[in-house]
Image 1: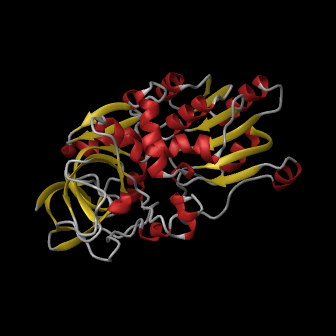
Image 2: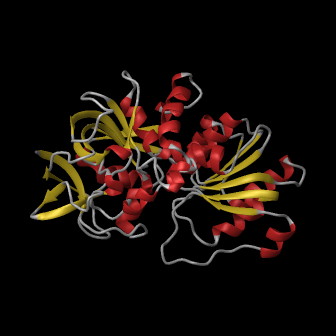
Image 3: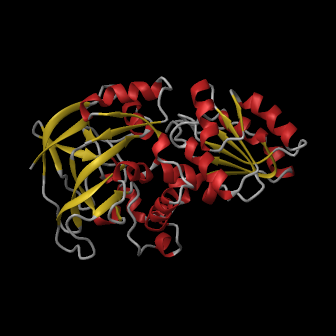
Amino acid sequence: MKTKAALLWGLGQKWEVEEIDLDPPGHGEVLVKLTASGLCHSDEHLVTGDLPIPLPVVGGHEGAGTIVEIGEGVDDLEIDDPVVLTFLPSCGRCSYCARGITNLCDLGAALMMGPQLDGTYRFHARGEDVGQMCLLGTFSEYTVVPVASVVKVDKGTALDKAALIGCGVTTGYGSAVRSAEVKAGDTVVVLGAGGIGMNAIQGARIAGARYIVAVDPVEYKRKRAREFGATHVAPSADAAWKVVSELTRGQLADSCIMTTDVAEGAYTGSALALVGKRGKVIITAIGHPEETTITASLLEMTLYEKQIRGALYGSSNAQHDVPRLLELYNTGQLKLDELITREYRLEDINDGYEDMREGRNIRGLIRY
């Protein structure tokens, strides 16, 4: 069949929207008609090369829609089922899934490389095979995905809002609740108040944090951070240290979650300086692949038992957490509508990413 999609053909280039070919679902796969797709910063990392991936590729990994065709071997889904697509497939059988850490499932080895799990491609354009960001490719009206990447949700779910749970909401919320293990009464600092950072703020609020300090150089984002639960804001890590030190009588924060646009090695030292004894620094942002050095006081880490943790998908379990987050939204505890700053047509995807780069969006959304 034919579908309209946004493709990246080369590093540093713009997304190109064109009609391309899409194969039917194979064994263990489903064809999904997308309702919406979020414009996540991770797809910008494809453009810059910070997430190396073979090109060309259909971008997009944050989406929701309905199933329109089912491949062989799929017996737990039906036509018209509403689904949220998760960028981390989970098999349910490997050692990591058995231990409940499905975000580190062995299927993740195929995460970025483009072909589907059987090594073949579903998208084709200009006589070439075309990969799919995270096996998904949600910058397309239709896509074929493995059933391991699908989370069925209740009928009547607002799929345009649920699309954001495919990545940004779950990653940010989980970075606070699961990776940082925020508890009632904690003091939390969030470095970077973008699409993921706002949800780390929400996660900390829902977990019962006493103080939540949002740090961002963009005034618009600092203002919006208060809507999602920030009790205090600061334009820089240095300014945040003064705020946190005063609030905690010098004990500093229990955790600092790094959700900046890129995780620079130099940021780590600033994050560690913001947390106190046994404080945790959570690195959620994507770093440059060639950067292998971070700034940190090893003496402080020993004497104060400070910790640095990585967080992939907020250490979340999609099959459990996606429905749970939708329940939080339905009960008014989790804000989704407010995250969407602007909606775009697929043809305007480059405008959406320009708005993101310029700090005008919390989250842009493509509506099909």
